[in-house]
Length: 246
Image 1: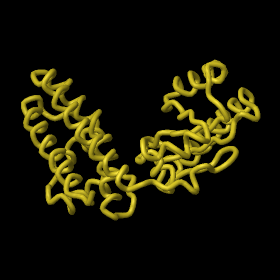
Image 2 (image 1 turned 90 degrees about the vertical axis):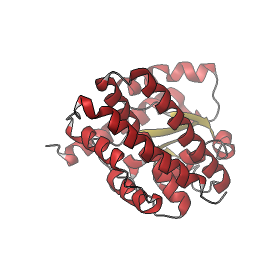
Image 3 (image 1 turned 60 degrees about the vertical axis):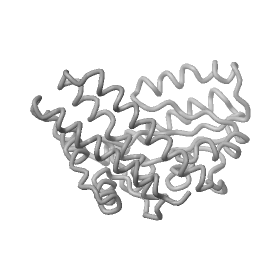
Image 4 (image 1 turned 180 degrees about the vertical axis):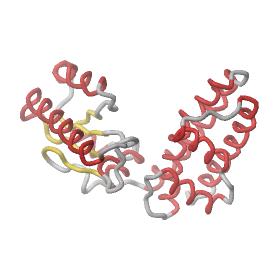
């Protein structure tokens, strides 16, 4: 059983080490370091929450990339997503390109160093909705393409489904926010809320999430049938977003 307190202490130590390394490398050029997303929320889960970090520098060129290379490699090799490297100007002008990411930052963040550049950002709903639908449809097409390549290989097909379901849950969370619902971070809460608004049982997503948690695979003979239910669930989610106000 995971000792959450000890895990949290370990992660806090890791975050402080990251900040220390960045400060040593960049000095006054380091304007801000921000932890954002589920790892900064109250229902943080040490087993599933990524350590998403925004690093704001006064400028970003080859020299800054050189200075950051060993730090980013160290952070990545520790199993974390690479930090977002932006200038302050880019933060202020990129909400139309990355509305989902900046919405997450607005909702849940913790400033680890420097200035809070996120506090006064405004995320335009039309850009937000467009990105959610674009990402959903792109991931739906990608699922079909990848499934066609491994349809006769049950193990690989199940791996594809368990690898992709988290992304659809994240996109489902953003779809619910667009509808006006309170942000949810736990996958089971997201799926339950989506059940209500899509009118779909989402049984395929439920089963795939159960497989992820238990590690027990479905019978090989049932894998294609599970894929069919999963694809129907994804289609229901795409339809739901398509009907939202533009």
